[in-house]
Length: 166
Image (cartoon, rainbow, N blue to C red; front, side, top):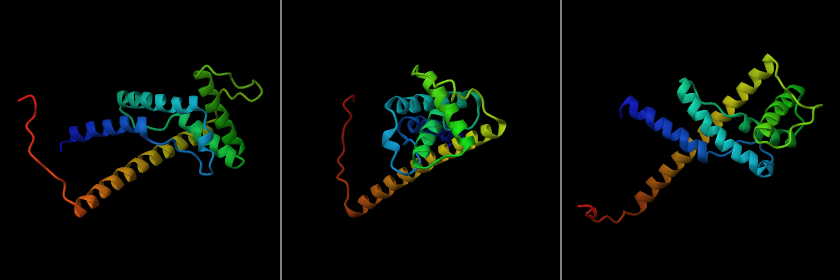
């Protein structure tokens, strides 16, 4: 397999991942409570992130919608600190505004983050993306192992087939 083949396969994996990777949430059972419009935003933003990262020749990361999902479930699982509250209000407010949902009330709206909060958000998004890729690889590995194990227990029936276009 050539380097360009591996690169194309990586792009394909990323696109499939954008569509089918799970949404990473804080453990605690709140993942089912994510609003449907936010789940849809995750998929759309993942696809957009793939396009932008490819054009800019940079690493793919998780999106603001994914960060909002994670922080949504984290805030329901346990109290979060002041910086994380600001980050959550920033990404959630941006998602609500982008979706044309009602905006956050003025008294809790966050328009900008500090440099430290930006670093924390970037680190969270990178961590979420790594978890997605890890899950994708573990799932693929499990499927390959299962197929290999099934191949050991029984042989597949094969018969020659003439393609219909010949």
